[in-house]
Length: 144
Image (cartoon, rainbow, N blue to C red; front, side, top):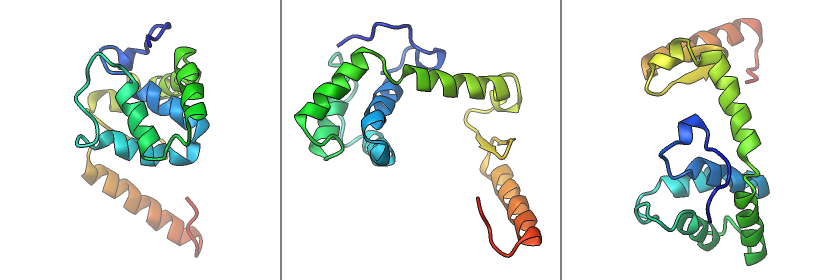
């Protein structure tokens, strides 16, 4: 199966795992993080090859993420139609507009913590600590 639309800039040259992950989550949003965990485990997937989405889809089916062959057919159709692309483009454009030229552009990876960017764990720990201090000053319960 080949994708018919142009890939997003951050997906060029990749295996489009993000598109697959988001497409599966359209049908099974409650299993998104479990599927992400499965995809991150190198022992569960063979190295990327020419068979495209088939190994991750087989993994999702065998691990119970995709519940039956009808759902698998629906997900394959959604992949062919690029059903998750608008969602991915919206997230990409949101973060590109906020952090594209900003501090996050200088980081290999980063966390947006209530509008502030943390490029490393020390800065993130400080931001979290500051947030917790502000919350504890203003209320007895923390709601995040």
